[in-house]
Image (tube, rainbow over all chains, first blue to last red; front, top):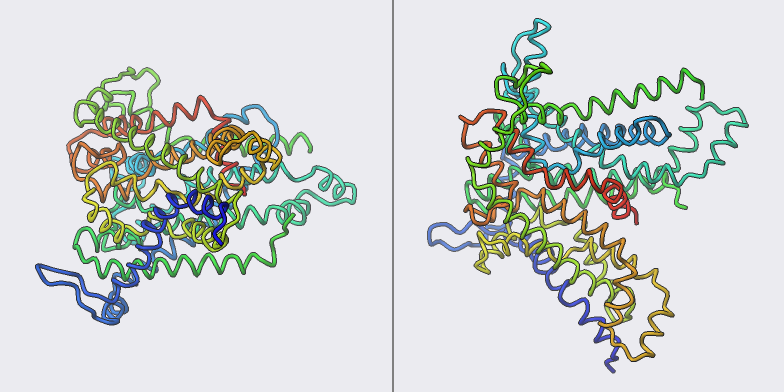
Length: 290
Length: 269
């Protein structure tokens, strides 16, 4: 028997759910399907090609390049921005003159569009004329080309991402710090624990759920946000600063090779799922739930 | 904490804060001074608004702003309606498939439309919505994050209020509107701020979907302006950059506390 409550429930979730299916589950499934078909070109329909796209992927040096880039990018930005976020939170958690200003300074980059942030930083990085070169020149150093040199292009982009992200993660640490009862640290102090010990043994472990939450966010962002690459390097020089999603964009919307774009998306999606699951297991034993 | 420690601690905070805000200060400096003072920091440099005037006249920013405004209000409004309905359904109704369907909604937190650009573009093309504002908005208006956030709030509403309204003869939609929505106002504010700043800043998807001035939001407009015209001076580009971020920046400075609390509320489950 169909209950009235069932029908109400289904009707309420129907509009949102059908849209989520249409723009998340359906395209995710189609990505998988299209990755074993060819790209339709000039009147020729897509036909089944089996694992040919994946074979091409394995032999594609650019794919390996951007994959390794992305892993370095994640490895370089995530721990640094999380550590900075924690440091910022600890610094502005105590009352002092100018605390509101300091908080604002840390948080403001977060609300700027990444495109705007990239424009601001481009002004620093420009060879000869940019601010970094002006400062270096003042101290007698020669000209640099941070964005145009393969070895420094990716790190230069990582700095921009860290600048934008750390303040965002800070507020979660601030909220968590404020929820830790003061008695814990006090009790430890009476027992003779130093401040470093208190941080390492009490504060840090109690912040673990926040660290898990923040790091999952950071991982997703490391693979999801590529806006700054458009402005700063365009992925160059020689794909030295290209990331996976940027390569997907280039493949699909510059060369219109959508089947290969789908294949690359499959890799990105599986990587994200793998990392999310991995993080849960990695943190599981260390997270202290309330 | 000893006096020395306190000085060290405050000094560290001040130094890091200064370092963090410097890039933005430089942008503000160059935008408000003639281009001759781009890297020449003399306090006597004349302050000017000319860079903003130049930027405003060099590209159709008025149109870009209108597009972004329509986009952001449209998306947030639609999200409020769709997510509230679904959140109410998931929070207060028992029906077969509820658990599975809810976890499918949560899957969107990981598999975001931001990543599925290739296939979503095909869908938008099939709807003949390429280069329209609806085309940019559609993949985002049903948000798994929104459903989750609002559902969490609805679950804390006491059942008795619900029952009382039902005894008075109110139907589900009127209960949702009269009981649940008013009690969840702080959540709506939080979600609204997060959503507005997310979509104000969104770039990749609008870049793909739009290809004309009539539909471009400010982020795409800014990138077109900053990358195609290599002859444009830095001070003008920086003025344009600040201009596009200004509405959010000013709103943030005015409602700083609400902003920070909103982001916190939206992040903590």
